Image (tube, helix red, strand yellow):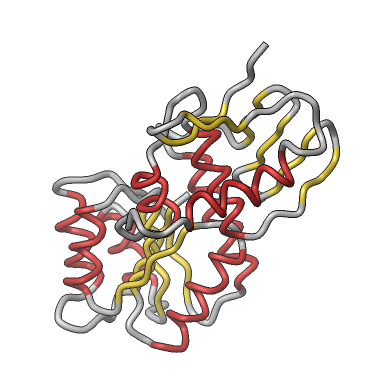
Length: 223
């Protein structure tokens, strides 16, 4: 799942970015209100963590503009702890409000709760044959055995299982997993798929990750 952080304080922003990525989320970080609004409107995030006191455009204004076009869940994370501020944030359309200083464990719990509430949310756990991918907890198992994946390997597998049965091109995989334009001279996608296969498929007779020559990769159960 993809989360946008809009936070101007460098230390807090970097801390959130690192913590969410280590928790299995794809996280992007914006340092100003206009940058955050642009990313929130241009991309499909599952949730936005939004500060109030931001340069150039405060969080109230960002949320107001966002709500005119999108219903992306928003969690305010701010030092403004007055009841009037909390009420204002929720009345503007925020889905939750957490005051700084905060415990990262509480923030993570609130994020997961909001993601579960999302009306178009996908299942927390996706199963393909004997492969089980827990999207919220970033856990993977096959035939009951836990697999130890790197964050990038998990992001790649998550994309494949979310779109199981669909051939995904290398350029799409590169943009979704690495957030980069695919360069045909690089084999980064092929190397990553090979490493993922070594963990997901190699120990098992039934293979789930398949190569479609000249097109890309797909994940599906085949008889």
